[in-house]
Amino acid sequence: MLANSASYGLHLVANGLDLGPGDEVVVAANDFPSDILPWLPLRDRGVEVRLVEPDGEVLTTDEVEAALSDRTRVVCLTWVHSFSGQVVDLEGVGRACRSRGVWFVVNGSQAVGAMPVDVHELPVDAMVSAGFKWLCGPYGTGVCWLRPELSDGLRPTKLYWLSALTADDLAAPSLDLESITPRRTGRLDVFGTASFFNHVPFIAALELLLELGIDEVAAHVDGLVVRLLAGIDRTRFRLVSGEEIRSPLVVVEPLREPSREVFERLAAAGVHVAHRRGRIRISPHLYNTPDEVDRALELL
Image (tube, helix red, strand yellow):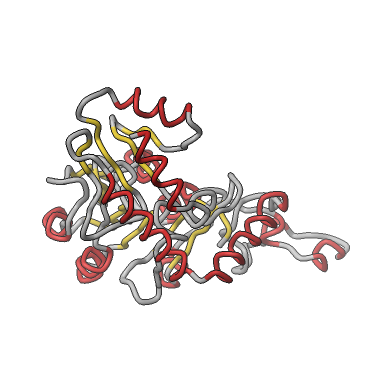
């Protein structure tokens, strides 16, 4: 369904599920705020939101299994960890959740568009993503995929006339608004009038990715990541992201100078990276070239 952010889909699930006293939601304590904040207001309903600290950068399957209890209803994790670039084992965690009847909600914003994924093959129940990152869309776009069993169990949290009425309804002599319920089609899309200024170019970006082929895009991105990993001076930077299980994110921690100085040096040279928790995150995509990677390495 259409969304305006990854957070839209996360709030949709958090507020649409029938969660109450005695229920529990498990999240990673070091995850990006958008994966934690939507669940915290549920504490007012008596829901326990458990922030579990991973031993490493991301929760492993064993750690998730150890955290599950008879009261756990939802596990929400990111696919590629924003602060480290490390990858969560969706298959393993998803199997652990499914064996216990727990919904598995995944934020794929740091991977969808740069890493192939088949939600129909993975044991995940929801996959959300921002549209303005790897999907190359404008800001204010996103997507949310829901497994039918989860979608059927969500209650609409907003009732908008366009999701409940047709042109024929409006042409009738009178309307019985008290009897209206949302139609299935579009009932969970972005609330309010669709932003054509955002979604028309978003569709164009998605069509480009599909035309290029996600496997081709992923191979190009991984080639740039490998080039970065090979060129990083390990006496000056500690590699935080993985080398064997790679993601599109290369995250390094400066050893000789403050991370702020590294970030500002790159920014001043027109090399756009992210500064996160004392680390530098580099995210090459389909529009980047090996020469640009080499320039970033020289600046590092």
